[in-house]
Image (cartoon, rainbow, N blue to C red; front, side):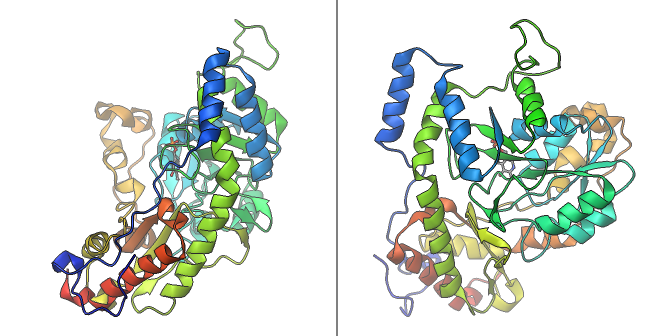
Length: 416
Ligand SMILES: *Cc1c(COP(=O)(O)O)cnc(C)c1O
């Protein structure tokens, strides 16, 4: 399946024999569970407002250990409705990490509020509570910790900061289905938490999202947003709130119910393989494996993120990723730029001509001087291995480690 790491073969990138000749588990995974649930939905003619969306919400709530759930079209709209639900208003500031997918910050802009970037920690790659504290102003209303790759932000420290300053926490748990902090599910530690079921995520219906909360009134408000502003129990053409149509379909719920049958076992498998990889890579010069978070009692892996010491290895991250790909490991550089470095923020102060930045145009913001040095370094030196690779078997995970060892051993052949 793979040649031994001690091979004298040159790097595959330079014409040598690739280490991994295996094909990795493909994603999405599906079987007769999805097929029969989809056929059942199709044949029933009940394509909306059926039992499957409700059943999926109930199963997800049970899995994540929350009380209430509101499903919706995707993880982006889940954040938007969550922010509205917890009372973030026009002109309020929301503290977000710059190491995330754009949705974490764009959702804040979309609802008329202002994203303020706080740096991440170099070990967890999640929000740094100390920098959060420095970024609080009298306009700050909420904090959005992102549980990157399935690892979690320090929810104890963030909860204390939120409490001391009268702030709300919305957890962006789009990578953290199944992760737990001291036995409590990701997304259940703040006022609410949001998840994504987009195609690459660890459970998917192509698209989809959900918000979980312990607060029934908040769940009702969020439901109302997804349901054209109808209040719970109100007549069909009564619209008491400004809402949108963000409803999940019965077809998506059918697929997600199929996905739920495997989520637990897949979560455990990825965790076991990631731990094995930690061990195999332990002590390898120039490679920093993801940090253990002792307060996390279970860790789902959406990604396995390592950091490179480019100087020690004598290779650039981008060349390293190319070499790893050539050895047969589908790695990537991931988020290569902090969110604030995107045009949408860099040009926000230039005014409404810049389309989507319009909501920021009258808010006197200027992101051109924002600097989060830890995030900038991580954007330069991180290497991502995607979740489907972590569903491989023992030989597969050894092949990943062997490929990394080989590239490390010969990294200086590649240079910068
Ligand atoms: C995927 C993702 C989202 C948005 O989810 P969509 O379903 O694609 O809208 C938000 N935050 C993070 C961290 C994500 O990875």
